[in-house]
Image (cartoon, rainbow, N blue to C red; front, top):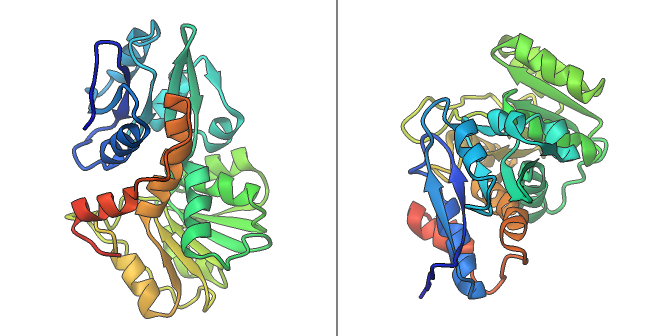
Length: 284
């Protein structure tokens, strides 16, 4: 049982909406397994309220926050110090408070590569053509991580071409930009496909892709984890391609976040995936 004292170390996750987040479940399970006097809480700042919240926390009220949609780019802009990987990602999913400063980082790329390594262990990202659908903070993080891992090119597909072009300019000449109408062209021969949008989220619009142009052994990662098997991942499995779920990515990015927030590695003695699956009602 977790025991929280008046001196507990406090951290959390910021997003809007936030009720769906599995991050509190994962981090609090690790806190309990590690025997820490700490707690990890979900918070949902009002639109425009993130900067004020972060400024108020400079004095040591909390250790830091994970940051999710729609605040990742705003969190980056509010920081005093930005890590190189957050700069390349153009967004922050982690802010830590130290000595009165706001430090921004991104562990999303770590999460993407960890998920690929776990669920598609034979994949060699080097010299692979990758497609990233979505040019928001998550999409840019994915593109940056794949480039750093050695992908020969990243084809960025976005409804708004201007935004994708801005990301490509920031990441270099190995990033190509494709409009939504050129999806088939972007997918042609691709070895990795990543959905970095919210399309496919339970109750929302699905992401309907014809994966036929992609490589026959392509790996398809969907950042959405509610439902665990999205329509995109179901289509990938049905076509013989390898699906990688968003829960693996979530846990992969949470591990370095936990260490940054609480000062020690995430315990391996608790199966947080099993806990998350139980909450999701899944078995995979």
